[in-house]
Length: 93
View 1 (cartoon, one colour):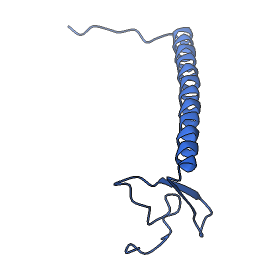
View 2 (cartoon, helix red, strand yellow):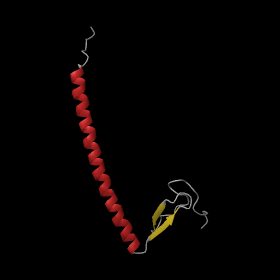
View 3 (cartoon, helix red, strand yellow):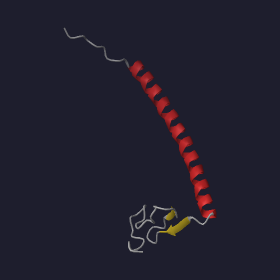
View 4 (tube, helix red, strand yellow):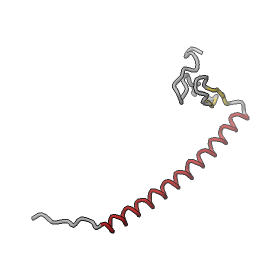
């Protein structure tokens, strides 16, 4: 025999929606904190590389996006702008 399941009431749905909204707001707040901390760490790394002369700075002539690339072994300079895909230089350079 098939069991009959009751549909949730409007009040139950409102309660579930409120709980879900609260959870999403908490997750958004947590993500904002994580991204803010990542931005701080990124700034520290960029400043340290720049102070040691290990940072290549470039600006896309097409869209003006600023590109920072560490001058470290096995990290190639970008050939295309990550923002607009405009070619920055020939690959042979």
